[in-house]
Image (cartoon, rainbow over all chains, first blue to last red; front, top):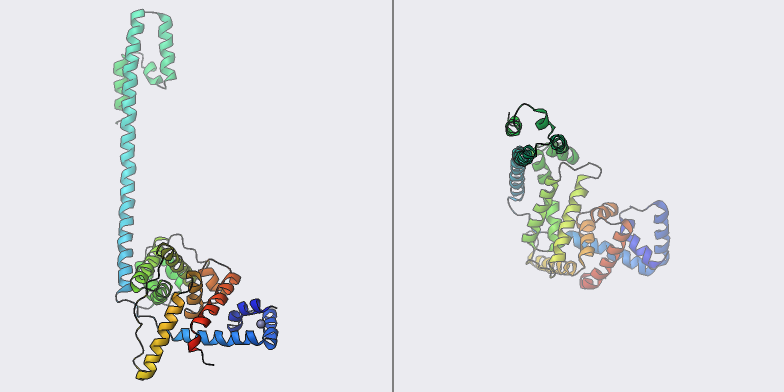
Length: 162
Length: 180
Ligand SMILES: [Zn+2]
């Protein structure tokens, strides 16, 4: 064992944290090396004077301040959990309104197409119109054959609200 | 009120929303967290902020805490990380005035004591932050080599080398106080 390694192990040698094999190696080195014996003496001396150096006392109210901050944080977390539940329901309302607006716009567009088709009075156009409704995912509008398209989409948009 | 529960059990209770359990943990460990932070950063005001921050980090992470490592080592690790991060941002080491001396000592001895204590603080303050941290955990806080390594997120061998280098510097700086 070299001095460098022996000296880095001295600390755990003193604290008796080495394995018995390591301990024997360091012990054998110390027996034959005056420099490392000096390093061992200086380690013990250093530990002694460090143990002597006082630290200032902990500031008054230290624990109380931490607990107060933790309490505030806990309350804030509880509030934000409630807020996020509220936000989720707010999002549902927003998404629903957006869906309804989209349905309304689609209805107006269909009304326009319908008007043009009626003007052309072509049976082919009527078939295309039904396909168009199915393609747009608005099959219910096509199925309500009896009503006007305007009535249909008003019924669809109101259905969502119930 | 003193609780007989282990730190780890208190931490699990705190995770369940028990603030009194958290308070117990703070009371048990405030001294060591404060002392460690003070000895690493060398400034009382900063040490208080950092030690408080460490406990609040523990509180914030209470749901994720798993009692795989001892709570004590876990707390040291957070304190150490915060202090070293802080020192990286703040270059020069600010040191407070003299620490209070023991009033029981005779005047002459007291003066000698405070001179030595001052020299020790200056010598430790002059070490690189990671060497100083190893010294603080190992010699002041009395952690084992393994615990020191865990608290520093390092290996036992690396800590051995840090300590050996730090001791060499301290021997030179404090040589005047060495009893031949
Ligand atoms: Zn040697």
